[in-house]
Image (cartoon, rainbow, N blue to C red):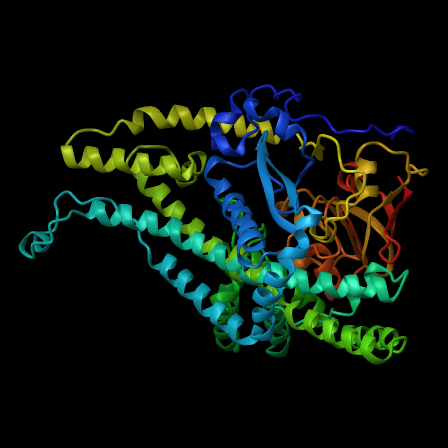
Length: 607
């Protein structure tokens, strides 16, 4: 780091396109790319890279996730609940990565929004339980409808019964309607995603703001600890694996998991064991819905789901069986977390009296009531909904591959969702006319060109931010969720930290741990983690829970107090420092680290 920090990040317009990625802008919608005609307006905004949710380069179809998520988030802030200080978050794709720019509300307009917010959000807070139960019904219904969609090749002849019944339509009508319905249903669930999420953050931020005012100097971590010990469905898949491991030990099946090679051989060995049938029934019961879980985050069409690759969950179970057989306690220390949570809250409550005490208890109670949803939504939307969605997209991709449009089912991801409909019409049109479609002579070469561009973009890490940052970053969502603070931005700009062997970030989960670093850039590397190592990554996914029993601490590049990494580490009782900015590129595997999750520091003890 230089002793003198720069004042501004580069402009997105000034960055050179990586070799081999020329023409990358054509892969994405015009409204998601920085346009020359908008340069003055775009350079006046501060943009940061959201590698927490979108750490990889987008293939064209995959932008559906960032488009639907960002649009719906903005609508709930701006049009549904009228959140007083915050509108939506503007977003652009630059060289394959997603960049955000929060849209604030002019100070003079905030007051007028307050009564609208109180009425609208108040209704949800007062009826949280009933509305949330209705939310689950809506979401599960949409998942069921997505799962029922089936893409099949058009037949040689329209079925005779369709002729005799006077149906007057061929199967292409259903094919087009199913595709449109697939997009519409996933859009609906992204609408539902933010129906509660923003309110969950708002309730916590309201409690956070009260504590900061009532208890000057209170650590952010102390506030976060007052709402930990939650029962979130996001932890349920991992809990199911632990239960299965405990059951395997109880039934005397540890030998069947020893030397685990793959799911097929392990499950066959269990089936042949005396009490194997009982365990296999429990395994089957756990699969639906809890194996609708990805080692990624659900935003990418190539994310691997447990239900589609049983080597993943069975491998985790095998590790848990080994530990359970040694007498280790596998489950989260929830009871201890609740004791600690209540102790901290009680100590701060004792410092208050009268109306202030009542206000504190009321805001704390609301925060605890709504807080679980901050993680729950992940399982229902990012994991379950998107898992079923991508499965149907790949099914359509395979249908078109069988018709010669491209080589593999996943090649469909190199085409945006709107042009996919053009491809479907090309196929249906040629089928109807009795000719050959144009696509098989066009798309293979075009997909190869696009794949080269995506691969070239993926060779470069994204710039952390663009343009001049504000003098003070105080927008609560930016700080709480992404961990982007004034100090963090100064580190990105090269400000001298004073100690080249120390990184600073968010004190996201308390405690101190020392150990060897294991730098992970992809879920594919999780198997490299060894007992007691410190996980260092650009960002973690909630589904990495099964490896948290091995590690002693977590360090991430991005993420605030309300990021998934921070919440999960607090629930697993692991020290964590998030939002360091560059830990994954500064730290190398094998270095010895000291992670202080209480003070937010990471020290490189031995290189």
